[in-house]
Image 1 (cartoon, rainbow, N blue to C red):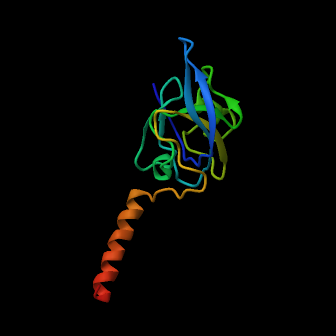
Image 2 (image 1 turned 120 degrees about the horizontal axis):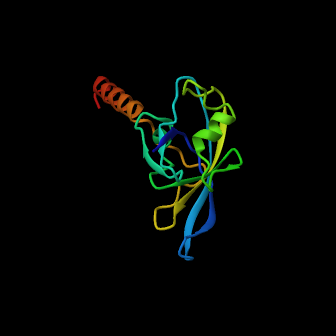
Image 3 (image 1 turned 135 degrees about the horizontal axis):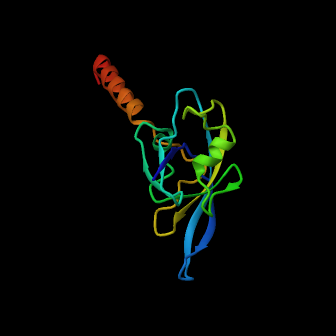
Length: 152
């Protein structure tokens, strides 16, 4: 199964994780902070191991562009989810995720996440997030219109 949640602002750190075979897998670990807002949804789908399976194009996580499929959520608001706890259950317990499935507005959620070292590292802290696709399309259209009016 999968659960749906988040928007993210990472801060890179070094980390490693031991596999069942005893080998050490190098990972990029980072902290993610997101603040809920009216009508928003995280648009983040996780498997039973709290690994990102996919991001909804219209969700906050995809709009932010930092968390990617294959990344793993390690903790939520300081509560470890590394040993079988579910991210969605932590968010329900702390009141961020309401009973109706909506998000409580104005909550800042802090995630600790990790990305395998063979993947590109998360963007550096302070890197601007990409614009949501709908906003990018609107700006492109407006720019074209303005250029046509100004003769350029």
